[in-house]
Image 1 (tube, rainbow, N blue to C red):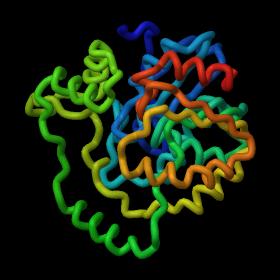
Image 2 (image 1 turned 60 degrees about the vertical axis):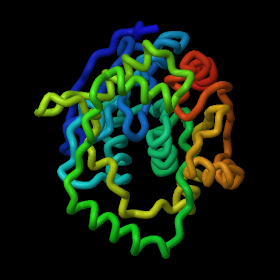
Image 3 (image 1 turned 135 degrees about the vertical axis):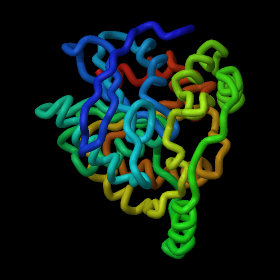
Length: 290
């Protein structure tokens, strides 16, 4: 099924950076902000927006270096996303706390932000984004060395061939994704470069290693300061990745950081729940967010 509800674009400046926002619904409707994950874009929330009951004004930014937002001139750093979200809320809702939903990386940003600025969040839905694997300080020298090496190397994506190829890859990674939707997603996540080749729309420098180690104890300290009700949503199918296993093994201690937590598991869904089971995800988040 192809997209139903039309979206409109807005281009603004956040922290001296050119940002693209995607809007669905009437501006007078209740505001819901959605934050996409790594190598994704705001556009791919389309199926979830179409499935949401009721009347919402949904706004989703393309994070810097993704979608139609401007690229950085160098590396990407997690605190920049927090600052961009802070500026975005100043633009969209300067006087009222907001309902915030994040997926994957977007959920990790939202979770940290909600602990740093608890007064700005009314309700928080975290979809498949419960932090990364814990690291050890002894990993820092190797991580910095790798980052220095990668900074010297030109970054680019290999040509993808065709939208059909991209759609096939998406279905391979997300087996329950419908062919028609996969084709639509493929078009949303790609662009033609100067040579006329089809490549991913994101900045290839997002593939560089992060020089700063993920510090779980810092994340937990932020989560403990969240005052809003929080919803965790996870797919019933374990994401087949070492990162997911490390997180799941420590899920009880992460869960304990949230004072007001509701959990939902979406059956027959993997990591990209909003693609594979948009209607089920909408049915889970709507009662929580209203």
